[in-house]
Amino acid sequence: MNELLNKLSSYNVFNYLLPGIVFAVLAGQFIGYPIVQRDILTGAFLYYFVGLVISRFGSLIIEPLLKALSFIKFAEYKDFVAVSQKDSKLEVLSEVNNTYRTLASLFSLLLLLKLYLKLEGKFPFLKGWDATILAALLLVMFLFSYRKQTAYITKRIKVNG
Image 1 (tube, rainbow, N blue to C red):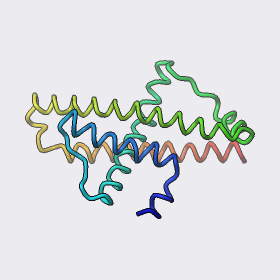
Image 2: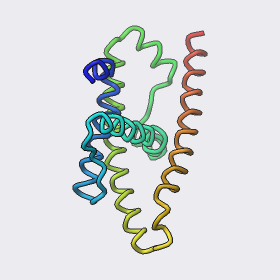
Image 3: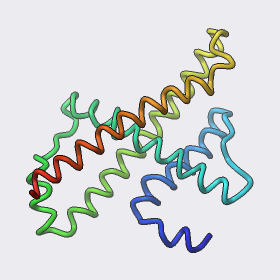
Image 4: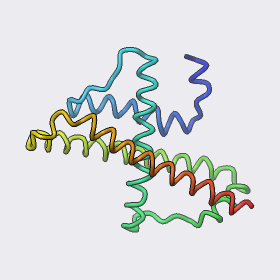
C-alpha cells in the first residue's frame, strides 16, 4: 500500500483522492447516501475513482460554464506553454487552480445528488434506475473527457511542433 501511495503525485492526491474521500464522507453524512468503505484498499480505489469523476465533471461542466458566464478567463494555450517553460511555478499554480475547480465540482455534485434524490421521491419511476442512469452519464462524461484530452494533446503538439 505504501508503494502505491508513493507513486501518486500531489496532483492525483489533491484532485482525485482527497475529493473522492470528502465526497464519500459528506454524501453519507449530509445526504444519507453511504459510500464510505471499510476495506482500505477497496476504499482507496473507489475514492480515487469518485475523485476522478468529480474532477472530470469540473473540467467538462464547471469550467466551461464559468467561462461562458465570464466568471473566469484563460490565457491563450500557446502563451501558457511558453511561460510554463520559463516559470516553473506556473505548473504548481495550475495544479492549485484545478484543485479549486475540483472542489467546486464536488459541492456541485453533492447538490445535484441531493436534487436527484428529491426528484426520485417525486417520480417513483426513477427508482431502480440509479445504476443505469449513472452508467450512462459516466459513459458520456468519459467519452467527452477522452475527446477533450485528445484535443489537448493535439494542441500541445502543434504549439511545440
